[in-house]
Image: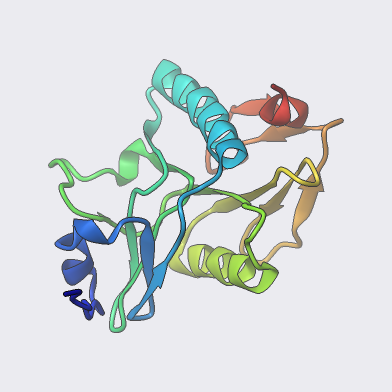
Amino acid sequence: MSTTLHITTAEELLHAPELGRCELVRGDLMMMSPAGFEHGRIVSRLCYRIERFVEQHGLGVVTGAETGFHIARNPDTVRAPDVGFVRMERLPETTVSGFFDGPPDLAVEVLSPDDRPRAVAAKVEDWLTAGCLTVWVVDPAKRVVTVQRRGADPRVFDASTELDGEDALPGFRVAVAEIFSR
């Protein structure tokens, strides 16, 4: 016998870990299949590089995939970037045991082959509307990273260029080619 859960709030989602990979978007539960190998490899490469830089400079906290950020209420939205970064001055003094309240300063989304452009654009818009400073959309198929900021045109970086953290992660730099190298 199967049970269908009706999840519409961040609190309900937090207490339903059996659901697996999902996000809550304006009160609607969005199920996602597990990420593929290439996706995971790229997420790991980026997470490692960003984490190393953040720790060396004492800048804040880096989160890995599946970390929930509660970015809207009534109806609730909880999104989970593939990599997130929150600056030190935005961290609460106590440990956060549930979802982080608000967006990361930097959200990184690594595309999977089955990602739909409209869904990705909606996720980027959710991040930026919630106050995320910068969103990186990493496209393994095209080997490019699109940087999006509120009120600015998207900028595309290819393997011949270098990506920087701008005001979301000042001083951080990585060659785009390095993100995709094996």
